[in-house]
Length: 530
Image: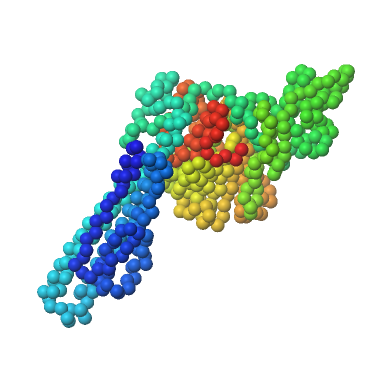
């Protein structure tokens, strides 16, 4: 109801006063607006510039007895449009009054008027001009107030999303004295926002999170005679190619004496243990046992598939889905770098970081954000039920793709300058893919792919990939020193999502999606591409 009352309070009346001079009545929507045009039928050059439809002719229709929070937000947005329209009318009036003053002072006009008449006309015009200036100041105040209330409305909508999933409020005491509520002096102009509860030691991953296809390696890293060892959900796995060239994923533990298989070699499409030479196929079956009688032995294997230059696995207990999502860059882009890193942080914290751009001017001061100005307001604009959108004021489109992928397209207008254009308006672009594979409670396997829609020859310059790798490591190190610190405090009881704000929208939605998944909700929030 507070949202409805706020939206209604923004509905401002129109005060129009007829001029003593000739006026032309112009109808915009359902409201009459009186502006001074001089001669009634005289065509004015300013009219086309300020000929904007009155937004009050478009009324938000309530779907029920009362507006919900999203309808109220739309009402607030329309009131912002009204303030803009009202200001245009006021400015137009001032311009036309100035023209009228010039007309009155025209030497040709003075020949037909007495001095007394001219003084009277000028006095009337001065009164009209003063009134118009006063109306402009009123309109400016209305715009300022409406913008402030719109920001508040966005907070209310965000609160509505959080109320369904949040189990802890800001006032809830934390377990660690060093990070208690008393030590955090957060000044709030309005009532405190409900927090997401992401605190305490990292727990074992929920089984529901395993029932997805996960990209775990790039195809270029898996040759016929090589292996790719990795952890996924705290289990050791190793990937290699069979006789048919197709990849397989088996448990990275020999059935004989638990030796790590990746320390061995690939022999005719079978992985050979370096301890006693036992050999396993891509489905986990042991086909060779040198120096002993052959036994029926098999190690665990999981579904493994290759698509579009990436190796995917299905670590869950449920049957795998028939489709694997596409992670290819858009048409016209050329892949310039594919990098894999092992990072000492829980994968959810890393995703939180990647889904947040507002930190860039403060964190990445030695790399890509060096010299960036700090915007007065940063926001992420997204559909009400989406996990994708774009950043304002930066020309960057971003999407969270369940279960652990972040895709982004960055518009590059000038080197080192990102502000001022949308992604579509930029001529050149950089596309990024980040895959945050949950290795263990405090480790993440990061797959990074970078593509450009310009300078294709850069890919063929010697050592260029090493340069990209060095730069990516620098950027990640700037993030890691902060995220590792977050993880330490979270393990001690601090809530890393204590006070979400406007630019945290995409990160909040990721957390709400993950909470719903782990609770076993049949209908997950937001539009997903699982």
